[in-house]
Amino acid sequence: MTLRRIPIAVFVFLACVLAALAALAAITLFAFGAFRQAYYDSMVDDLSARAKLAAPLAAPYLESGDYASLQALCRTITEGLDMRVTVILPDGRVVADSVRDPASMENHGDREELRLALNSGKGQASRLSETLGTGMFYYALPVHIGDTVAGVVRVSLYKDRLRAIPPLVYSRLLIGAGVAALVGLFTSAAVSRVLRRPMERLVSGMGRFAGGDFTAPIETPVLSEMALLSESLNKMAARIDERLRAVTKERNQQEAVLSSMVEGVLAVDNQGRVMTFNAAAARLTGIDFARSPGACLGDVAPDQPITGFVSQILENGTAAESEFGDVGRGDRILRAHGSVLRDAQRKGIGAVVVLNDVTRLRRLEQVRRDFVANVSHELRTPITSIKGFVETLLDGALNDQKDATRFLEILAKQADRLNAILGDLLTLSSIEEGEEKASISLEHRAIRDILKASMELCSKKASDKNIAVYLDCPQGLTGHINPSLLEQAVANLIDNAVKYSPAGSSVQVRALRQNGVVIRVEDHGCGVAPEHLPRLFERFYRVDKARSRSLGGTGLGLAIVKHVITAHGGRVTVESAPGVGSTFSIFLPDVDDP
Image 1 (cartoon, helix red, strand yellow):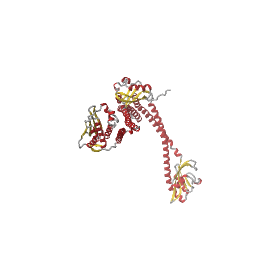
Image 2 (cartoon, one colour; image 1 turned 90 degrees about the vertical axis):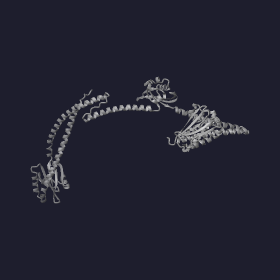
Image 3 (cartoon, helix red, strand yellow; image 1 turned 45 degrees about the vertical axis):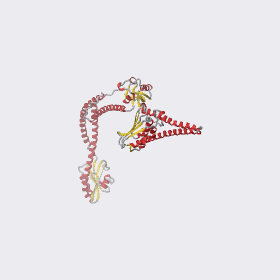
Image 4 (cartoon, helix red, strand yellow; image 1 turned 135 degrees about the vertical axis):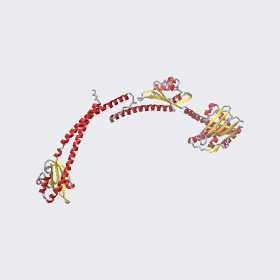
């Protein structure tokens, strides 16, 4: 069943009429009560005034005891008036009354107005008169003779007088209500007509909003309720427009975040078409996604490992991880984490892949493995040699003085080698610990003194090979250094230069100020091939392992140099060419350099 629609003008008209009638009824009842109370108050005031007039007149008669004259006075006072006057002694005896014979009246000592007048100076009450058998209003005042209360004058009025007033009040109120009802009727009709036009504008505005046009606001009507409604609708339109702008801004922010990420992010739909990607994904994979927006990944990069990885996720519908190299550049290794892309209803709509460049991490892991293997090998070689010669001596070689001496010399040499390896490892560990804690102590020292001390440490080896070591350093050159560590680092470079230089050649040690302190050690030895240079400062890395061991190296000298200079906040580089020689350069910052 379809309910009949009522025009708002009719609805407002009926509502206004009903509201006006209800308001008139409430006002009428309130006005009647107010009039009744006002009349009652005026009657009490009138009784009070009459009692105040009668009290002085009754005083002489009470003082003389002339109650007959007092009786006549009471009747004279009330003559022609619809009221009653009674004079009562403090003990309750009635001595005069304008209506009844006092002798026939009972004692009034228990009357409320009498007690109040004697106790508080005045008294009033409203009740059924036991004497007259009708409702009365009473007002009593004490009569004083000097300081003594000689009696009480009580003035009373019939309640019927109050009931005689309401019909007049009712008639006038009803006339006023009728006039107000007519005015309300015409006003309601006018209001309903006034409401029609703004309501039509509201309906028109809501139609525009429903059609998606939020640019033209609804005109604000004069009526506050409709103004509030139109303002609410305008605010709703503004908020929708604001949210659309916020969605656009959020999308732009997401694009900014994606473009700023180091990790590559790639999302495809269920058909493998590229939905979203960031610059890092293009850089890491070497795929130009922007060239073919929305294209299928298999068409853009058919031979790339990531294409097969994404296809695996779409086919299996599960998360996956993989690691692959030779993407974009041959030396790059990528770690891929992929999962199914789901919508709000958890339905799979594609796949998302996050790519991390783990090339450096894998290289560090390889360096760690090589270090462990090299340490094991470097320590095992002298230990094996020592163990073998000790067993030989125990098997009887001690009896041959010549062989025993030779074997013991070999044992001492291997022990020295083992001690040198352990010493270099401890030195390297100590330097690294100082780097981590930034705790190595630095001081201003003359660079020339440090270089001379380093050359002195290598002088015997250089002399044995007839190699001249030359120093070129200004006298006033100073640096912010740790003297012992820098001395060891430079000594290691000079020692390497002497080891790998031919007999009769020379080694140059130079120092100068150039945006800090630069120290160079140049030799004319065998040199190093370019493919070995990137790993030259790794621990136990040797270009020619057999030759290095025969020359007594531990494989840690250049690693110590690198860490010493790094602890100073500097850096070390090498330039070398096979058959020409090598130049190792140390760069130390000035004390005020960041």
